Length: 510
Image 1 (cartoon, rainbow, N blue to C red):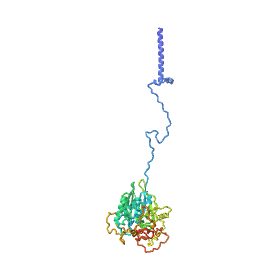
Image 2 (cartoon, one colour):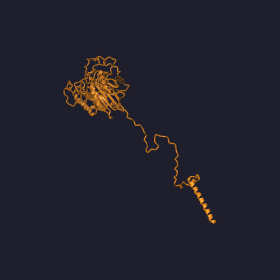
Image 3 (spheres, rainbow, N blue to C red):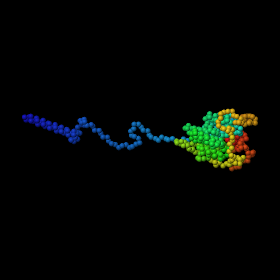
Image 4 (tube, one colour):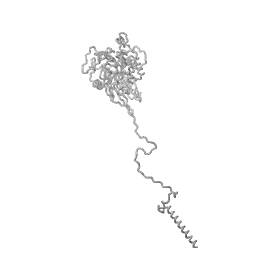
């Protein structure tokens, strides 16, 4: 009995111990017991509780930058695109260019004789100005034709059409033919000239039809022209330019008293009318000498640019001339403004006699300042004193041209009423001088200047007359109105002609 009783005691004790162990185990799981006991139990023994994720350590945010720290692709750097910029167009103007001679003579001292086959000769020394502009405009005073039927007038200028290459070789893009020499050889000569210009791509403004020169970027320059024109006639040409959507219009006008250094009232009236109708500049020619530049409504008017490459006279008495360059600026909105007018003083010959090759002058040349004074109106000269046969400045009387309707006409055999060949006493070729027929002179090479030793001492070109001195008394009766003030009885005087008192000055034919 005692043994059985002892077993029960032991069993009870063991059970109590197990119950106590189970009690402590449950308390441990429920958190009732401190952590030292819990830390001794691996977390892997608790499958229902996930492993704790470590908390990231907070760090200071990086300084803000213009570019994101992380991108999928590199971001290009942002730069402002340049906007449209203004465009400048440079226009060049000169005076009278007669690229031929009286009756087409090719004697050694004439334009054709000097130039030969070197068509770049006339404008070679001004090429830097002509080639680096937008458009060069000259007054073409003469014809390109082989037709010999002269108009019934004293001075008639022509050259073989091959001499038109002087324009292209010289970087001339446009001409005005609205003058009193465009029909020196009638309808035929005018038509031949226009055909020749068309073939070589030279734009031409005529008596009734303006020219339109278009640049590569579409800027349109219109040129209206006239010989003693009416305002109504010029307005029709201007309106035609506007219909063609020209951006600017230039007026090229042929009028004024020859060898007078100041403009007439008629010149001023026409020039102002051109500006009033909308032209941005007026370029005039015909007086054969320089006249002042005026600004009217802030637009330039050159009343005369004189002669330039001038084959109409082998020895002109006044060699002063100039190139004008006018910048025209178009802004991105299409507004057009004018830049500052540039003046390049020149001499119409690079040699002692006329070699038909204008040359720019250096500032230390005495003629440089004289030319500027003629253009700014300060040139001290009395026009009347230079013309002793005149008691006052004459009224402008334009020489009638042969064709009353100078519009271009097809080639045809001229009627007797159109042209009248000038008679000669011997019936020989009027372009031949007697001395040339007997013993022709050698023609200089392409780039050779004419033989300057042929000119006698007493016929060298004099300096400009001293305006403070009274003019010399004429030794003969004053010449008729159609004769040049300094003579002109021989329109092609040869090597000894020219100068102030003799020569082939073309009188009222400029």
